[in-house]
Structures are given as C-alpha cells and as structure tokens.
Length: 275
Image (tube, rainbow, N blue to C red):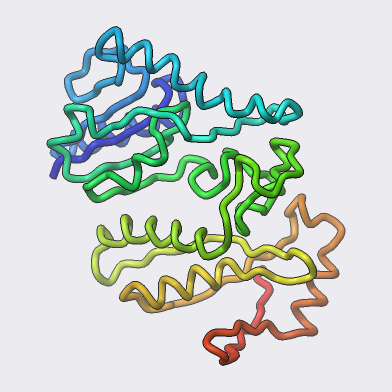
C-alpha cells in the first residue's frame, strides 16, 4: 500500500511536524509512505515540496497572496486567520500522486490545495482534521461562533452583515452532503466490528433547536451499514458562549421533549445531561 500525505506550510508548523512524524512512523513499520510538504527544502527521498522549478516557486508565492486578496473586500475583518481556499496547487500533477493508493490530507491551507480539486481526486481520501477549517466557511477556530452548523454567512470574523458573504454554505442539506463525503472517504477503511464517533454540536437559533447531530446521525444510519451504539449529550457547563444561561438550558431539557419529524412521523428523543 502506497500512502501519500499532504500538508501545507513547512516543517516549522505544528500540523506539518505531526504529519512528518506519522510519515516516519509508517516507514518504520514497513509502509510505503510519501509526503508532500508545501515549502519543503530538505533532501529526504520520500518527501517533496511543490517548488521543484522556478515556475512552481513563483506560483507557490503568488497563490497565497491571491487567496488572501479576497479578504480585501472585508476591511473590518478581525485579526484571526481566515482561509478562503479558492486558490491552490493541483496535487494530481505531482509525481508522487500517480503511484499512491491512498491520499491522506492534513492541514492544507496557505493555498496548498484549491478546494475544487478535492472532488476530482480519484483515490481514497483520509482527512486528519488539524483545526476547524474543513467544516467552517473559512475560519480555523470558530471560538464561540456556531454558525458553521447552519451554513455560515454574516461571518463575525469577517465583520460582515451579508448573509451571502465569503463564508456562506447554502443550507443544512449541503452541510450534511459534505459530511457524507467525509464519511464515505473514511468509513471504507474501518475494519468490520470497529467503532467510530461523530462529535458535533447543535445550534439554538431563532428560538429553535437545529439538531445538526441528529441530521448527521440520521444520514449515517440511512446511507451506511452501521449500528448506533449510544448517544451522549454534552454538558454545556464551562462553555464560554453559554455563561450565565445554564439554567435556561436545564429548564428546556427537563420541561420539554424534543421531537424530530421525518416523513410525517414524529420520533421522540430523550435529552440527558451528562456529568
């Protein structure tokens, strides 16, 4: 089996270092592992950068500037990182790609990969999520913002009031479909009888709970051969975004039931508080 790891940045970054250590461990176990690091300058034979000639070095410098140039439309943006992901390298053109059996994505920002290329990768993909970017509209750490669960838009990091701004994912259906692609690329490599967990938050918006966790759970049950073994409801104590409102959520949990409609039928879920 030939595994190709992809990581943006250089070996001074935490994600790239973690990728490098995994790559080395696999080689020690006899696995044929190769690694593409965006700004690699070393000479190890199983590691390559994407700056192999003058033209590629030039474009590697230009792409991050082009990607970040989209943020010029948001002059009041906050200082935290935001990556549009609209410009990047086509990894299918790299010599390592052709002989690989599995593509293992890690941190792919800094215009390492154009997100439109991801759907064109014709090999099994595993994605180790190094921060929140793969499931947000562009931010790397959402902090107390939960808009990624309902499609983003009017991004507080961009200081935008436009619901169709750079962060926008159209709707919950699109979010669940993107999540399904992640499951398809991951679960095919899970041995029969093994377990996996989905950790995802719900959203309370416009006086209504948007049960994103249940939407994803329902999709997994319908589209994959799995058995649901348990559901855990997170205790919100200690969440900075919910300071001072714990009593409200406790009241809602203990004094009402939660119903999810599907095909005209009501399905009741009990709400538990975990300690």
